[in-house]
Length: 97
Image 1: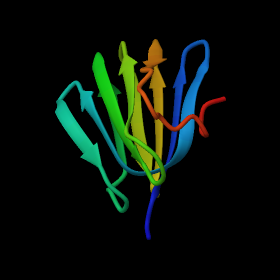
Image 2: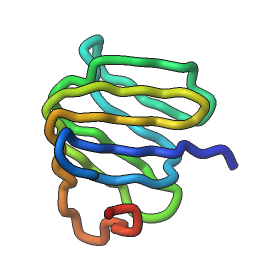
Image 3: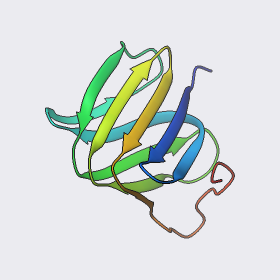
Image 4: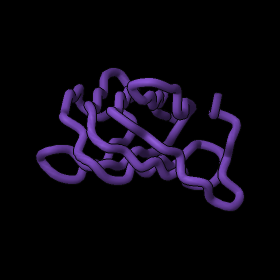
């Protein structure tokens, strides 16, 4: 099964990394969903929520204050000005450092 390798970092700390089936977020041009096989992309990240559907575990939500969103060869890198992993019951913490 194809999957995405996702890495999310804030300006001053690591947020999350791991394998995912989908990443959804807001860019300056609107909402975007990334699935495996997506075309390369570089976009400005808008303030709001990132939703990550990991390969294993519950959905992960990250609140961001802006930054940028990069997709290339099933690798998604999100660099946010500020990012906060939302604490949800049963969230998968395996990718959190």
